Amino acid sequence: MHPILTGRLRQLLYLGVWLGIGGLLAAVLQLVHRRPFGQLVLFLAPLAVFYAFACLSAWWVCRANPPGTTLPERMLAVIAGASAQATLMWVLLAAFWDVVIARVSHQTPVRADVLHDVVVLGVAGFVLYAQSMFGHYMLLTLEAARHAERRILSSQVSAREAELRALRAQLNPHFLFNSLNSISSLAGSDPESARRMCQLLGDFLRTSLSVGARERVAFADELALAERYLAVEQVRFGERLHFEKHVEPDAERCQVPPLLIQPLIENAVKHGVADRIEGGTVSVSATLHDGLLEINVANPRDPDAPPRRGAGMGLENVRQRLAALDERHARLDVFSEREAYRVRLMLPAAAPESGAALA
Figure 1 (cartoon, rainbow, N blue to C red):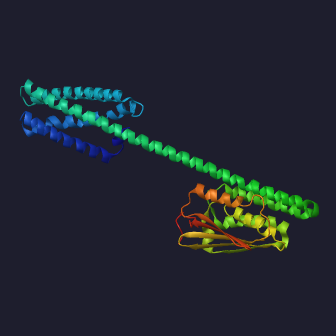
Figure 2 (figure 1 turned 90 degrees about the vertical axis):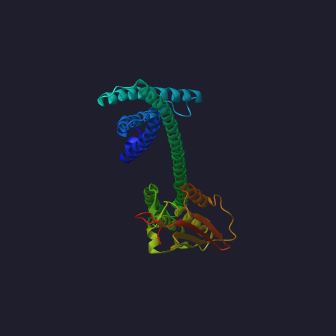
Figure 3 (figure 1 turned 180 degrees about the vertical axis):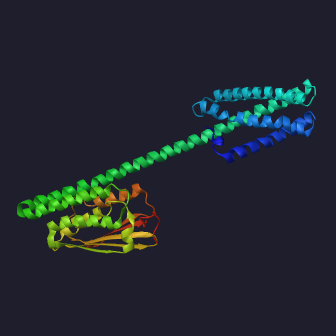
């Protein structure tokens, strides 16, 4: 269906424009051949309405010969041919209508007057239909540009979602590899702890699959998942590993991308606490200010410990996910001191009900 025919207001505005065109044609015809005003209105009003809808046929003619795939010379030929056909139909109808009005008015049709009307309407009809063709070609060009833009945006979204899925897929194998090494080291010396670690690992993986399948999760759920991870690691480290959290109640309700905190805490355990003989405390804090959720993950570190292989993988994963998510105002900052390490994550504070920023 033609876009103009999809709304009553559009139809009324379109007919209003054509009645204005009919008024201009009436002024021209009055100069060529003076006649009573009522007779002139009776002659032109139906013809203007008829040609208004006739010009809408240009929409389908243009779609059959779309811009971009139709050669320019063919396009001009189509415009000229369609305009000539529409004009011929209009002038024949005008001549017939001119005769009918004269006979109804008990007048004898004057061939010269009819010829004058036909010439004026023929020239005007050709120009108006050609303009309608050009206008429809402009609309089709804009429509094609919008469709191309939507296709580009759709492909970008698909690429971003694929990138996010790939980044998420890196987390569980990376963590699973470390956990299996821990279970292997405990299997010989402490089978009971190894068995308990297997159970906790299974619970963690089931929960991580559920959380990771969602686009957004409450920070409280994300933190609970991180605590499950720490429960797995505490089987191996025992009293060497401690955990502290200081989270504001409003911060717990904020929606965050899933599996974003766990790699930061894993990094703190693997490259911080594990390197210290006395172990240490991993602390997590979360506060709200200026519409942003600030999350800090801190841990002690051994300044003399050699760098571990794979250090920074978790941080890089989080950075890439933030870039792929295109989060406004989201960033990851690292503060490295001689005996302490802290990661600060800034995210828009989105509420669970509406996604609006929290105060």
